[in-house]
Image (cartoon, rainbow, N blue to C red; front, top):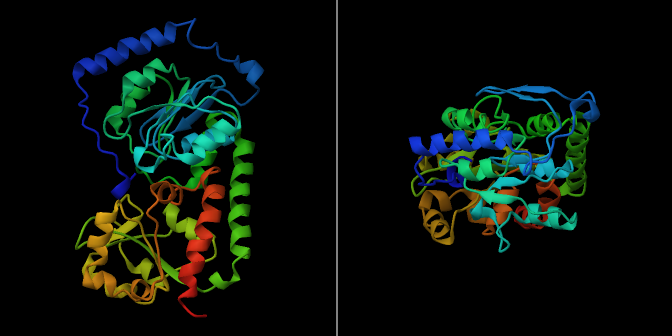
Length: 348
Protein backbone atom coordinates (compact mmCIF):
# COMPACT_ATOMS: atom_id res chain seq x y z
CA UNK A 1 0.00 0.00 0.00
CA UNK A 2 1.36 3.47 -0.76
CA UNK A 3 3.08 5.84 1.65
CA UNK A 4 3.33 4.74 5.28
CA UNK A 5 1.70 1.42 4.54
CA UNK A 6 4.37 0.18 2.15
CA UNK A 7 6.06 -2.94 3.42
CA UNK A 8 9.78 -3.04 2.77
CA UNK A 9 11.42 -6.44 2.95
CA UNK A 10 15.06 -7.26 2.32
CA UNK A 11 14.96 -10.94 1.34
CA UNK A 12 16.60 -10.88 -2.08
CA UNK A 13 14.95 -12.92 -4.82
CA UNK A 14 17.80 -14.87 -6.43
CA UNK A 15 17.81 -16.90 -9.62
CA UNK A 16 18.19 -20.07 -7.56
CA UNK A 17 15.11 -19.17 -5.51
CA UNK A 18 13.05 -18.69 -8.68
CA UNK A 19 14.27 -22.03 -10.00
CA UNK A 20 13.37 -23.73 -6.74
CA UNK A 21 9.90 -22.20 -6.83
CA UNK A 22 9.37 -23.51 -10.36
CA UNK A 23 10.36 -27.04 -9.29
CA UNK A 24 8.12 -26.90 -6.21
CA UNK A 25 5.24 -25.58 -8.30
CA UNK A 26 5.51 -28.52 -10.67
CA UNK A 27 5.55 -30.87 -7.72
CA UNK A 28 2.50 -29.20 -6.22
CA UNK A 29 0.60 -29.58 -9.46
CA UNK A 30 1.23 -33.33 -9.48
CA UNK A 31 0.50 -33.91 -5.79
CA UNK A 32 -2.59 -35.97 -5.00
CA UNK A 33 -2.21 -36.64 -1.30
CA UNK A 34 -1.64 -33.13 0.09
CA UNK A 35 -3.89 -31.02 -2.13
CA UNK A 36 -7.64 -31.61 -1.94
CA UNK A 37 -9.21 -32.71 -5.21
CA UNK A 38 -11.00 -29.66 -6.67
CA UNK A 39 -14.74 -29.91 -7.11
CA UNK A 40 -15.51 -30.82 -10.73
CA UNK A 41 -16.55 -27.89 -12.85
CA UNK A 42 -19.88 -29.51 -13.66
CA UNK A 43 -20.74 -29.93 -9.97
CA UNK A 44 -19.68 -26.35 -9.26
CA UNK A 45 -22.33 -25.06 -11.66
CA UNK A 46 -22.13 -22.74 -14.61
CA UNK A 47 -19.78 -20.29 -12.87
CA UNK A 48 -16.65 -22.06 -14.11
CA UNK A 49 -14.45 -21.79 -15.99
CA UNK A 50 -13.89 -18.11 -15.17
CA UNK A 51 -11.42 -15.85 -16.98
CA UNK A 52 -10.35 -12.56 -15.41
CA UNK A 53 -8.15 -10.01 -17.18
CA UNK A 54 -5.71 -7.81 -15.28
CA UNK A 55 -2.99 -5.31 -16.08
CA UNK A 56 -0.40 -8.06 -15.62
CA UNK A 57 -2.07 -10.94 -17.41
CA UNK A 58 -5.08 -13.20 -17.70
CA UNK A 59 -6.18 -15.74 -15.11
CA UNK A 60 -8.40 -18.68 -16.02
CA UNK A 61 -9.94 -20.54 -13.10
CA UNK A 62 -11.28 -23.84 -14.38
CA UNK A 63 -12.87 -25.17 -11.21
CA UNK A 64 -14.23 -23.88 -7.94
CA UNK A 65 -11.20 -22.85 -5.82
CA UNK A 66 -10.81 -24.69 -2.54
CA UNK A 67 -7.41 -23.36 -1.49
CA UNK A 68 -7.14 -19.59 -1.74
CA UNK A 69 -4.10 -17.39 -1.16
CA UNK A 70 -4.34 -13.59 -1.01
CA UNK A 71 -1.81 -10.81 -1.51
CA UNK A 72 -2.18 -7.11 -0.87
CA UNK A 73 -5.10 -6.00 1.26
CA UNK A 74 -8.86 -6.49 1.37
CA UNK A 75 -9.01 -9.69 -0.65
CA UNK A 76 -8.81 -11.99 2.38
CA UNK A 77 -11.69 -10.16 4.03
CA UNK A 78 -13.95 -10.45 1.01
CA UNK A 79 -13.14 -14.14 0.57
CA UNK A 80 -13.94 -14.76 4.26
CA UNK A 81 -17.23 -12.86 3.94
CA UNK A 82 -18.09 -15.13 1.02
CA UNK A 83 -17.46 -18.18 3.18
CA UNK A 84 -14.01 -19.03 1.79
CA UNK A 85 -11.31 -18.58 4.44
CA UNK A 86 -7.94 -18.44 2.64
CA UNK A 87 -5.27 -20.99 3.48
CA UNK A 88 -2.68 -18.21 3.30
CA UNK A 89 -2.58 -14.42 3.47
CA UNK A 90 0.08 -11.74 3.22
CA UNK A 91 1.08 -10.66 6.73
CA UNK A 92 0.66 -7.07 7.81
CA UNK A 93 2.40 -6.68 11.17
CA UNK A 94 1.95 -2.89 11.40
CA UNK A 95 -1.83 -3.18 11.59
CA UNK A 96 -2.07 -6.46 13.50
CA UNK A 97 -2.96 -6.77 17.18
CA UNK A 98 -1.45 -9.02 19.85
CA UNK A 99 -2.85 -12.10 18.10
CA UNK A 100 -0.52 -11.40 15.18
CA UNK A 101 -3.48 -10.96 12.83
CA UNK A 102 -5.56 -8.03 11.66
CA UNK A 103 -8.23 -8.12 14.39
CA UNK A 104 -11.28 -8.19 12.11
CA UNK A 105 -9.83 -11.19 10.28
CA UNK A 106 -9.02 -12.99 13.53
CA UNK A 107 -12.49 -12.26 14.93
CA UNK A 108 -14.37 -13.38 11.81
CA UNK A 109 -12.47 -16.63 11.37
CA UNK A 110 -12.48 -17.68 15.02
CA UNK A 111 -16.15 -16.74 15.42
CA UNK A 112 -16.96 -19.04 12.50
CA UNK A 113 -14.89 -21.80 14.09
CA UNK A 114 -12.47 -21.81 11.17
CA UNK A 115 -8.72 -22.26 10.89
CA UNK A 116 -6.69 -19.06 10.76
CA UNK A 117 -4.76 -18.62 7.50
CA UNK A 118 -1.01 -19.08 7.42
CA UNK A 119 0.71 -15.71 7.12
CA UNK A 120 3.71 -15.07 4.90
CA UNK A 121 5.90 -12.15 3.78
CA UNK A 122 4.65 -10.10 0.87
CA UNK A 123 5.44 -6.64 -0.45
CA UNK A 124 8.74 -6.31 -2.28
CA UNK A 125 9.95 -9.75 -1.18
CA UNK A 126 7.11 -12.23 -1.50
CA UNK A 127 7.80 -15.56 0.17
CA UNK A 128 7.10 -17.68 -2.90
CA UNK A 129 8.23 -20.87 -1.15
CA UNK A 130 5.56 -20.40 1.53
CA UNK A 131 2.91 -19.89 -1.15
CA UNK A 132 3.96 -23.03 -3.04
CA UNK A 133 3.72 -25.05 0.17
CA UNK A 134 0.10 -23.93 0.54
CA UNK A 135 -0.86 -25.59 -2.80
CA UNK A 136 -3.24 -22.78 -3.83
CA UNK A 137 -5.93 -23.19 -6.47
CA UNK A 138 -6.02 -19.43 -6.99
CA UNK A 139 -4.03 -16.38 -5.86
CA UNK A 140 -6.06 -13.20 -5.37
CA UNK A 141 -4.25 -9.86 -5.57
CA UNK A 142 -6.63 -7.33 -7.17
CA UNK A 143 -5.67 -4.61 -4.66
CA UNK A 144 -1.93 -4.99 -4.32
CA UNK A 145 1.39 -3.76 -5.59
CA UNK A 146 2.76 -6.95 -7.10
CA UNK A 147 5.16 -6.41 -9.98
CA UNK A 148 5.18 -8.09 -13.38
CA UNK A 149 8.20 -10.12 -12.31
CA UNK A 150 6.37 -11.32 -9.21
CA UNK A 151 3.21 -12.00 -11.19
CA UNK A 152 5.06 -14.17 -13.68
CA UNK A 153 6.28 -16.38 -10.83
CA UNK A 154 2.91 -16.47 -9.08
CA UNK A 155 0.95 -17.44 -12.20
CA UNK A 156 3.15 -20.54 -12.53
CA UNK A 157 2.07 -21.57 -9.04
CA UNK A 158 -1.68 -20.96 -9.55
CA UNK A 159 -4.00 -18.71 -11.59
CA UNK A 160 -3.29 -15.22 -10.27
CA UNK A 161 -5.77 -12.34 -10.31
CA UNK A 162 -3.96 -8.98 -10.29
CA UNK A 163 -5.21 -5.40 -10.48
CA UNK A 164 -7.07 -4.07 -13.55
CA UNK A 165 -5.15 -0.78 -13.81
CA UNK A 166 -2.43 0.75 -11.67
CA UNK A 167 -1.15 -0.92 -8.45
CA UNK A 168 -3.14 -0.04 -5.33
CA UNK A 169 -5.85 1.88 -7.22
CA UNK A 170 -8.61 -0.71 -7.62
CA UNK A 171 -11.98 0.58 -6.39
CA UNK A 172 -13.31 -1.25 -3.35
CA UNK A 173 -16.50 -2.41 -5.04
CA UNK A 174 -14.55 -3.55 -8.10
CA UNK A 175 -12.30 -5.57 -5.82
CA UNK A 176 -15.30 -7.32 -4.27
CA UNK A 177 -16.81 -8.02 -7.70
CA UNK A 178 -13.51 -9.43 -8.95
CA UNK A 179 -13.07 -11.77 -5.98
CA UNK A 180 -16.68 -12.89 -6.07
CA UNK A 181 -16.31 -13.70 -9.77
CA UNK A 182 -13.10 -15.65 -9.14
CA UNK A 183 -14.88 -17.70 -6.48
CA UNK A 184 -17.96 -18.31 -8.62
CA UNK A 185 -20.15 -16.09 -6.43
CA UNK A 186 -20.85 -12.92 -8.49
CA UNK A 187 -24.36 -12.38 -7.13
CA UNK A 188 -23.11 -12.70 -3.56
CA UNK A 189 -20.49 -10.08 -4.35
CA UNK A 190 -23.25 -7.67 -5.34
CA UNK A 191 -25.01 -8.47 -2.07
CA UNK A 192 -21.89 -7.64 -0.08
CA UNK A 193 -21.51 -4.31 -1.87
CA UNK A 194 -25.14 -3.43 -1.13
CA UNK A 195 -24.65 -4.42 2.50
CA UNK A 196 -21.61 -2.16 2.88
CA UNK A 197 -23.40 0.78 1.26
CA UNK A 198 -26.34 0.24 3.59
CA UNK A 199 -24.14 0.11 6.69
CA UNK A 200 -22.42 3.36 5.74
CA UNK A 201 -25.71 5.05 4.80
CA UNK A 202 -27.28 4.04 8.11
CA UNK A 203 -24.31 5.50 9.98
CA UNK A 204 -24.57 8.74 8.00
CA UNK A 205 -28.31 8.95 8.71
CA UNK A 206 -27.57 8.67 12.43
CA UNK A 207 -25.36 11.78 12.26
CA UNK A 208 -27.31 14.68 10.72
CA UNK A 209 -24.74 17.05 12.30
CA UNK A 210 -22.21 15.90 9.69
CA UNK A 211 -24.19 17.55 6.89
CA UNK A 212 -22.17 20.29 5.16
CA UNK A 213 -19.09 19.60 7.29
CA UNK A 214 -16.08 19.66 4.97
CA UNK A 215 -12.85 17.72 5.40
CA UNK A 216 -9.47 17.01 3.90
CA UNK A 217 -7.66 13.72 4.47
CA UNK A 218 -3.94 14.46 4.61
CA UNK A 219 -0.70 12.55 5.05
CA UNK A 220 2.96 13.37 5.44
CA UNK A 221 6.11 11.64 4.25
CA UNK A 222 8.20 13.30 6.94
CA UNK A 223 8.78 16.86 8.16
CA UNK A 224 8.33 19.51 5.48
CA UNK A 225 5.97 17.39 3.40
CA UNK A 226 2.22 17.39 2.97
CA UNK A 227 -0.07 15.30 0.81
CA UNK A 228 -3.82 15.09 0.35
CA UNK A 229 -5.79 11.97 -0.53
CA UNK A 230 -8.25 12.51 -3.37
CA UNK A 231 -11.88 11.37 -3.75
CA UNK A 232 -11.93 7.76 -4.88
CA UNK A 233 -9.15 6.80 -2.46
CA UNK A 234 -10.69 4.33 -0.03
CA UNK A 235 -10.09 6.18 3.23
CA UNK A 236 -11.60 9.35 1.72
CA UNK A 237 -14.59 7.41 0.42
CA UNK A 238 -15.07 5.89 3.87
CA UNK A 239 -15.36 9.34 5.49
CA UNK A 240 -17.51 10.73 2.66
CA UNK A 241 -19.89 7.80 3.00
CA UNK A 242 -20.35 8.65 6.67
CA UNK A 243 -21.93 11.95 5.61
CA UNK A 244 -19.08 14.46 5.45
CA UNK A 245 -18.09 16.45 2.33
CA UNK A 246 -14.65 16.61 0.75
CA UNK A 247 -13.35 20.20 0.80
CA UNK A 248 -13.74 21.51 -2.80
CA UNK A 249 -10.12 22.71 -2.74
CA UNK A 250 -8.98 19.08 -2.92
CA UNK A 251 -10.15 18.89 -6.52
CA UNK A 252 -7.68 21.63 -7.47
CA UNK A 253 -4.67 19.50 -6.55
CA UNK A 254 -2.94 17.48 -9.26
CA UNK A 255 -2.76 13.76 -8.63
CA UNK A 256 0.59 12.10 -8.14
CA UNK A 257 0.10 9.39 -10.77
CA UNK A 258 -1.16 6.06 -9.52
CA UNK A 259 -1.61 7.13 -5.90
CA UNK A 260 -5.11 8.68 -5.73
CA UNK A 261 -3.42 11.52 -3.86
CA UNK A 262 -1.54 14.76 -4.40
CA UNK A 263 1.77 15.63 -2.77
CA UNK A 264 1.30 19.39 -2.38
CA UNK A 265 4.11 20.34 0.02
CA UNK A 266 3.84 21.87 3.48
CA UNK A 267 4.05 25.37 1.98
CA UNK A 268 0.52 24.81 0.64
CA UNK A 269 -0.97 24.02 4.04
CA UNK A 270 -2.81 27.40 4.07
CA UNK A 271 -4.92 26.12 1.15
CA UNK A 272 -6.68 23.84 3.63
CA UNK A 273 -8.00 26.80 5.62
CA UNK A 274 -11.63 26.07 4.73
CA UNK A 275 -11.55 22.40 5.68
CA UNK A 276 -13.76 22.08 8.76
CA UNK A 277 -11.98 18.88 9.78
CA UNK A 278 -8.62 17.34 9.01
CA UNK A 279 -8.22 13.55 8.94
CA UNK A 280 -4.78 12.01 9.08
CA UNK A 281 -2.62 9.25 10.58
CA UNK A 282 0.92 8.93 11.90
CA UNK A 283 3.27 5.97 11.79
CA UNK A 284 4.34 6.44 15.41
CA UNK A 285 4.24 8.90 18.30
CA UNK A 286 7.68 10.36 17.50
CA UNK A 287 6.58 11.19 13.97
CA UNK A 288 3.37 12.71 15.26
CA UNK A 289 5.24 15.10 17.55
CA UNK A 290 7.59 16.13 14.74
CA UNK A 291 4.74 16.79 12.33
CA UNK A 292 2.52 18.68 14.76
CA UNK A 293 5.46 20.86 15.88
CA UNK A 294 5.70 22.40 12.40
CA UNK A 295 4.28 25.92 12.43
CA UNK A 296 2.55 25.73 9.06
CA UNK A 297 0.95 22.41 10.00
CA UNK A 298 -0.16 23.62 13.44
CA UNK A 299 -1.62 26.77 11.85
CA UNK A 300 -4.13 24.86 9.72
CA UNK A 301 -7.41 26.15 11.25
CA UNK A 302 -8.93 22.70 11.82
CA UNK A 303 -5.73 21.47 13.48
CA UNK A 304 -5.43 24.59 15.60
CA UNK A 305 -9.08 24.36 16.67
CA UNK A 306 -8.90 20.68 17.63
CA UNK A 307 -10.80 19.49 14.59
CA UNK A 308 -8.18 16.85 13.85
CA UNK A 309 -9.31 13.23 13.51
CA UNK A 310 -6.48 10.76 13.94
CA UNK A 311 -5.69 7.61 15.88
CA UNK A 312 -2.60 6.03 17.42
CA UNK A 313 -4.15 2.56 17.02
CA UNK A 314 -2.45 1.00 14.00
CA UNK A 315 -5.25 -1.54 13.59
CA UNK A 316 -7.83 1.22 13.39
CA UNK A 317 -5.74 3.26 10.95
CA UNK A 318 -5.47 0.19 8.74
CA UNK A 319 -9.16 -0.71 8.93
CA UNK A 320 -10.32 2.83 8.24
CA UNK A 321 -8.17 2.84 5.11
CA UNK A 322 -9.87 -0.18 3.54
CA UNK A 323 -13.51 -0.63 2.57
CA UNK A 324 -14.55 -4.27 2.65
CA UNK A 325 -17.16 -6.50 4.30
CA UNK A 326 -15.17 -6.98 7.51
CA UNK A 327 -13.55 -3.58 8.07
CA UNK A 328 -16.63 -1.39 7.63
CA UNK A 329 -18.70 -2.79 10.53
CA UNK A 330 -15.52 -3.00 12.65
CA UNK A 331 -14.66 0.64 11.96
CA UNK A 332 -18.00 2.44 12.17
CA UNK A 333 -18.60 2.21 15.92
CA UNK A 334 -15.02 3.29 16.57
CA UNK A 335 -14.99 6.10 14.01
CA UNK A 336 -18.21 7.94 14.87
CA UNK A 337 -17.22 9.03 18.41
CA UNK A 338 -13.90 10.37 17.09
CA UNK A 339 -15.65 12.36 14.37
CA UNK A 340 -18.34 13.55 16.82
CA UNK A 341 -15.64 15.04 19.04
CA UNK A 342 -14.03 16.89 16.13
CA UNK A 343 -17.36 18.16 14.77
CA UNK A 344 -18.22 19.51 18.23
CA UNK A 345 -15.30 21.96 17.96
CA UNK A 346 -17.21 23.75 15.18
CA UNK A 347 -19.76 24.89 17.75
CA UNK A 348 -22.69 24.42 15.38
